[in-house]
Image 1 (cartoon, one colour):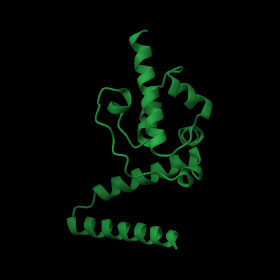
Image 2: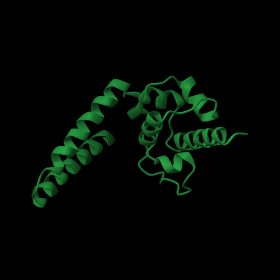
Image 3: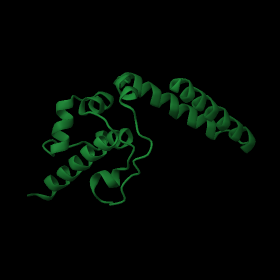
Image 4: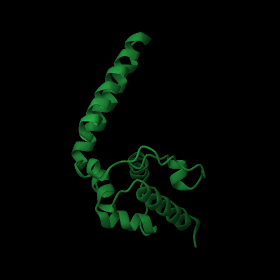
Length: 139
């Protein structure tokens, strides 16, 4: 088997492993990165090549890094931060892209704040909002 095919197979195996760890379906991952579940199946089998841009999206969505996904690192990403199926089901590709753009814009603006106390206060505010939302869901 050619080296390229071995690499594609390794990427596919690790994609599947990580997707299963996170409790996601092929359809959910495909929907968020903008491909069909059939394409995810082909990626996972190593039947189709994953473009560099798509590989970056997949690594981001599966909360891992490209080195591990490609098999150049054996340091496995921690399984923490489990994504719920509902959180993925509600995200269309357009909504996911808009959310990413907004998050990147927020990070850029946050980085421009010179005062550490202001950055710390804003971080505390965000944590409080997230915790309050999480506790409201449990009720």
